[in-house]
Structure formats: C-alpha cells, structure tokens
Length: 636
Ligand code: AHR
Image 1 (tube, rainbow, N blue to C red):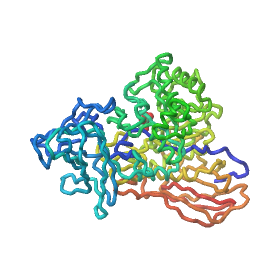
Image 2: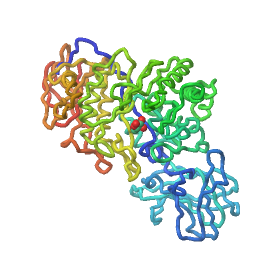
Image 3: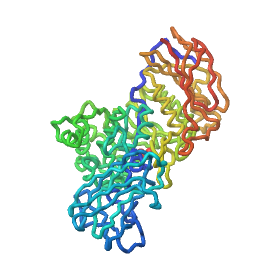
C-alpha cells in the first residue's frame, strides 16, 4: 500500500462516529435507564398488573388489584390497591424488576413511592429486596404511612459488603396491618452514572464513553414514529417530574415508562460530550398513516419548533423557561434536526411536501440548523421516493446487511455525487450472530467503515443500530445488537470493539492510498459483476484506509484482513519527511469467523495493543488472519 503524504487529503468529519438510540430490546427500561421497578405506574395492565404479584397467592387475609378511582393526576390514573382484611405478617406484594433486581455488595439503593393508607393514620410497612423465595433479605427499610391522602415517601436500602451478586431477587412491600393501602409510582434506583437522580446505569455508560461518540441520534428509529399517531414519541409528555409522565405504548411490543424523556436524552449527551441529533415526529406512523402537507400537519410542525426551543431556547423563551424549571437552565447546542424516520416507506409520496413544510418553518426560525431528510441514497432499504420541493441539507441512509454485502459494497461512497446533500448513515449494521454480532460481522463492519472514513468529506455522520440488547429471555426484538447486558453485567460484541477502534483512531485528514488489492479499484472493476450476481469469493479479501492527525502527525492505517491466512503488506509512506521506528498496533482478531463474545464469555475477542518496531519509509507488516488492525505511525 502506498500512502500518499505529499498532498493534504479531504477532512475527516469530526462527527463521523456517533450513537443511534431508541426504546427497543429494553434499551432504557431494563437497560440504560437506572429504574429497577418494572411497570412502576401500573399502566402496563395486560397481565393485571404486569410485573407485580401478591406475596402469598392463596392467602385470603388480603387481596391486591388495580384501582382506577384514585388518580393522583392526569398522568397517574391507575394505582395498586391492597386490601388487608385481617392483620397478617405475610401480607404484601412484590415486583420482579427487569429480570430481577441487581443485588451487589455495599450498594445503596434509593427509592420512593406515592401512597395513602386508610388505616389508623399510622401504618407501619416494610420495603425490601429479597431472594425470590423470600428466605434471604438483602436490604430492608421500615416506613410509616401517615396520611390518608396521596403523599410521596422516600427510602434508602443498603446491602452488606459480604453478599454475592445476584439477580434471583424481587422488590417487596410488606403491608401487615389491616386496612386499605394505595400505591403509585413505585421506584428504586441503584447508584447512577455521575450520581444523577433519575440517571443511567454506570457500566453501560462506561461502555459508551469508550466509544468516544460525537453525537446521539434521538429518539429513534421506529420509536419516534410509533405504531399510530397516539403512540408517537410525544416529547411534551416525556418532560417534567416523573409524576407527570404517563408513559406510552412503544412500537417494539412493550410500554415505555418515558423515564428516559427528552431532557434525560440531552443530559446523556452532556455526560458523554455528544451533540444531540434531534429527530422530530413528521406526521407519519408505522401503520403507514400520514398527514399530507398543509394546515392539518402544521400543529406537528409547531410542536417540532417548540421542541427545538425546549432544547436550545434562552430563559426568555417559553420552552427555555420550562427547561430551566425542569432543572437545566443552560441551553443545549444543536446543529442537526431530522424530519421523521424512514418516511421513504410512505408509498403515498407525501414526504416530499411534509419535509418541505418542516424545512421552511425550521429554517425560518433557526437558519443555523441543518435539516436532515430521512430518505435518500442508492439501495437505501429500497426507498425510492425523491425529494423535489426542497433539497435536503443532509440525507439519512440505512443499511442492514450480511458481511459479504458490506464487504462487496465497501466502496459505496467512492463515486458518490460530491455536489449533492451530505450523508448521514444513521442506521447500519452487519447482521450476523445473535443477540450480538459475531466476528464475521465485525469484519463486514470494519470493511464498511474504511469506506465511510475514506469518504468522510461526504459521509458526515454514521451510527450503528441498534445499540443495545437486554439478553434476558424475552427481552429482545431485534436479533443483532451492538452491546448486550443482563440485570447485572454488560459486554461488547466484536462489532462494538471495531467501533471503539475506529472512533478512537480517527485523525482529521484522509490520506490517499494506492495499492495492489486496492479496495476502491478492485471493487470498481467488479461492480458490473456485482449487478450480475457477484459471488462471495470475488469480493476483495482485504480493506484499508488511512487518516492522519494533522496536529500530532500520527498516521492511522486501518487494515481489515478477512482471510483465514495472514497477509504480508509492504507499506510505502510516500513523501513522509520523518518517521519514528516505533509505533503502536491495535489488533482485534478471532480464530474463527463465527467466534463471538457473550454475557458468559464477554472478553473472548477484545482489541490487543502492542508497541512495535521496524517502521520506516518503506516497511513490511504482517496482518494476522481474520483481523481488524489499526497501525499508529508517528511522523513528527
Ligand atoms: O434499528 C431498528 C429499526 O430499523 C429502527 O427502529 C428503524 O428505523 C429501522 O427500520
């Protein structure tokens, strides 16, 4: 490979690598969002009430049931009523959490609930985290309910230092004294990232931080649209105190608590130094219901304008003031707003007009914003609608593929029109392996990333999807996801580590490369054949690209070897003035392509970093079989 260092190359987009997120696979409830109580406001009622049970099913001294007569407000309309007819130390009810409550040693859990009791005016109750058979109490607290009206109570549960981690657990409220009890918004949090109240799970946040992401596309995905209009991500109902959030039915088969609301997304961005890429609902839902551009769409355009004001407005604006009241006076930075999600599936062709209506209204008020259209690109999930009324600033393209499809198309952007809109590859993934992808998928991803990086003058942003999966039985809706976790632990797939390697070794300038097996040349030749049905063996076996940090002089050569044999590569640093003989090599490799990481074997495949010697203006390096490598070369 010859790296042409005589000329400066195109810039690497500083926002090339980011995150895409939505409520899917229990990404937030039962995932990133710290809440441990499932169905905390009793609105998930298909199983009457889901996740909650009576402590002793056949005990006639007491009963539990949903109650609709004691609304706290418009959001908290249904509560749990416990009727204890006869004093009984075994009276009470429990929550199974999200596949158990994570019990860890020396840990402080903070909880709260709304309650009222019709007893003597002083009802002693107990809350505890227990083993599922009730024999082991890991932590407990006594509380006295002293009001016949709704009142919020708080409590702290502390585990000892000598217990073993377990999720074979439940959260119990014991109500021994005779009387009627009512409960709502029952909540329990473990320690959260940065100790933020209503915050996020620490291990998962640490994993995201290691990806060094530059943006977060929020809040979806299908989750933005909802199955029907009433199930869209209605941002106004996701802000403010938790007691004001009714939650909503999400498209991925379960209800969302909306504890991860608009402000929590933005604070998540702040925590990891990411810019929000705000997707706004555009009048089209998953059941393919839509509103044509015009006066009936305008309320949704107005809602998007309000949402942008909530994110960016000063304290002199209506929504900026509300954001301050919600706890965040400082406006957030915002550059990109996306109109809808995958509206190219709307076969009516209404997106052309809807996009133009949103574009005009947003640009008039916020000329500095870049407006992303959610359709565009060649071979983009088969979406064919073209925008004729308004040229988009950026188009969002989605690619879900096999490894050989990714590899055969790794030159996708090499001949893209440089005069058209910029590209945001807002969802992409090589889908091999489940619940998280295997090493072959990581090879496909890495090949694809060399292509995006080489063309990052036009590909300004990219985000893998989906990001998360709870690997507990029944939690998953999408079968290949970047990061897996259960109630206690999390792990990264090989694809996750490929992202970590690329994102942390990005540079700011693309170096032109020429070589035998040049992926751009090889694939260009075989493209016609691809149309006629290229077979896997004709797909190039190696992929590479190079970038440079113009300040430090560090060169990042990424090399992907998909073969089961090592590859000797002669590297020619054409035009380099000075080069350090010592460099750094980071390698992710696997013995077999279907090898993978899992919750029980989380670090089978992880990047290994070593110092290497022997780098000169022309040198040879052997890249292992089945490997993704980043070679750091110092030139200053
Ligand atoms: O990432 C999973 C889904 O794939 C997203 O919700 C949707 O936008 C796409 O079709």
